[in-house]
Image (cartoon, chains in turn red, purple):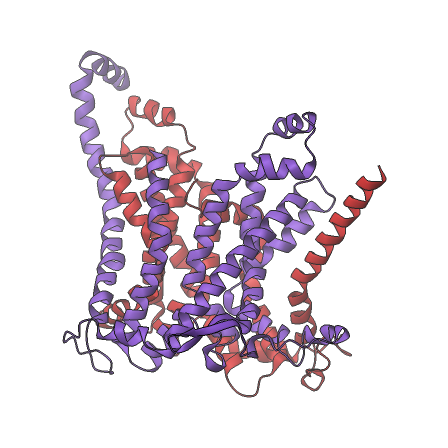
Length: 273
Length: 321
């Protein structure tokens, strides 16, 4: 009995130490961001602020606000469009398979894994040629196209759980392809849409490579602005930490409020559903 | 009334009727899928081909020049100090990163799975970094692993002051091309940040896997006299192999194309100790206008990822059918 207790205590100690390690960055972000600049020094990194000072937040916010809004204008349409297209594709690939549809699916799926560096130069040339370079619309388009494989995969796996017999009996009742999609599949897809939307929202909000190469001034999303904040001037750690927290807040809030769906998306992202 | 007739008809002349209706619906189905498929054909496969073409051209200035250069850019890269360092760094980063993510995920999920108190708390603490951007992670860890502050203020007690990402030491190094091949110590700092962010993924995967293993199986092993440790090693771990394969593949493709974390946290580093192909590609293409060189790097990155992904996709898809 005594040994069981010791292993149990060791388990909790290990988990707690790991939890401490995982939370350290959070502590540092919060503590630093609440300090006035003269208290932010290399030697006093871990100490609590003597007074709580929000100036770093106001400063970070004024610098990031336009880019924060750009991110919102980018993320909302890109998420909605890619989710809708994913649902359409997933519906066909799970309930209306045809000869060659599995091959098509595999061919589409590969797009999810490619390093985007390998399409970046043509993409930028293309966006320039249709006047969407350095625009939020161009980024929306990019994220919709390269989001298709994952949203298709997620919806396909999600719809695989809807019994085929339901579709069959609807067909016997005279329902066709579109009416089954509208009246049966879509109403059953709410949680699927939540999972996919959260996944796309998080990924597009956090994405950096497309953002930094496709936009270069007024239309840059918040992650690029955050990176610029740390690259420019003398490093003001308090402003930078406040900026990091502001930039991370939307996805963090989504995780806190809808964590269950976030994890489901994470699991659905692995190819086997 | 209409429906009834319809059903009767189906019974009577089922084959003909059914076939006809399926055809028009099937056409619609193809029509649903086709736009996305064509988009991906162009923007994935077409653009990869285009990049491949650029990589064989002389376009190394601001003005596009598509004259054929053969393998010139590739030959240049493989002789290039920076690119050789990138390949070395990628190898060590990938091995350490995947290894640690797997070990941490397994360990933490095994502990969390044992009906412990505060399960939700622990799970959320280990998972939340997944919701963050690599840029945020990079900015924060750049400070935590700053040699003159951060964790080093604690490590002072033990009398050690690692130089983290500023260290230019190559462990167990030997001459290889123009670089020293071995573990760049600076890469460990980047690995720590990456593991902090991605452990949640393997944790969630393993936890889902563990939840899927029936309790009776462990009971049976316990009755047979197996210890807890033996149960994990002999019964549970083998059952988790498919999950491990998925985690390795997904982490490998993240690691081979990594860019944002390193760009935000350390950049290339002195002597390119933390440089990776993703950063080199970005800088040489968009800061240096060496488009052909950048394309060649991108194609090499793609091939590295494909080595992992293509067999995985093909076997996985075949298993589904």
